[in-house]
Length: 252
Image 1 (cartoon, rainbow, N blue to C red):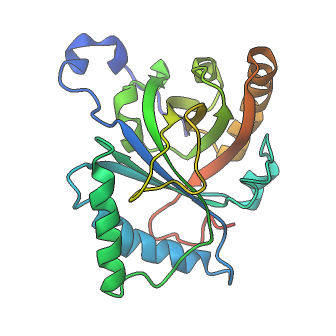
Image 2 (cartoon, rainbow, N blue to C red; image 1 turned 135 degrees about the vertical axis):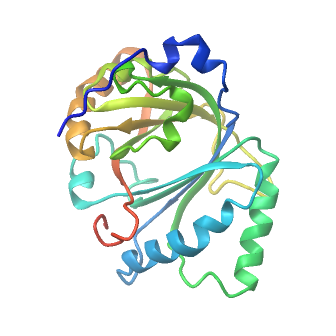
Image 3 (spheres, rainbow, N blue to C red; image 1 turned 60 degrees about the vertical axis):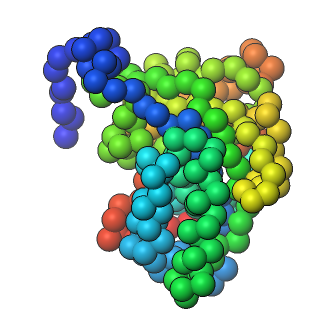
């Protein structure tokens, strides 16, 4: 079923934009491999019902997003890199500033001391990024500022070595909006693992089409981008957005 939305898109309506713009500046991105004993659905249930809601007691946290890969998503990854090949789970926390990360770490320690962390996934990378630009496709009407709360079917995640905005991707079928940022290497207490450099960028393409299908549309545009602009791709993969209480619907 396709819903046709009417009216002026938010990003072209000054009165809407005057009501408020995003205050998110900082992303914390945790990439993990699948559960070593195949208990991915159990992990997702615990994280969604216990761990993730608790993070929203932090004043600096504005939004969070849980993504999961599937065999269909894995099959259409445009880039494979030894550093990221094991990634099947991706958790994103969006903060108003890097200073919020210290309380984030303290809360995680507190939950562990209370016996509230029964599951762990093998970590692949934890990294911090600073938000640089946002775009929304006019057809979705909602503005780029609110994309983290918009009901995406999935997200296409790009990690690249280079500093070129991915604005050409907004015209690809299935791409409803884009957030893009640069790596922000940090030391203790929120050190990234392994360390990333400032020349690395991340892009989230918010999708309103099935992720594996959108990936097929994106691939030729991405290949042209990489060949034309000298950008080195590190990771290019579609993910499903987790559906609450359907913990085993999207699992690796």
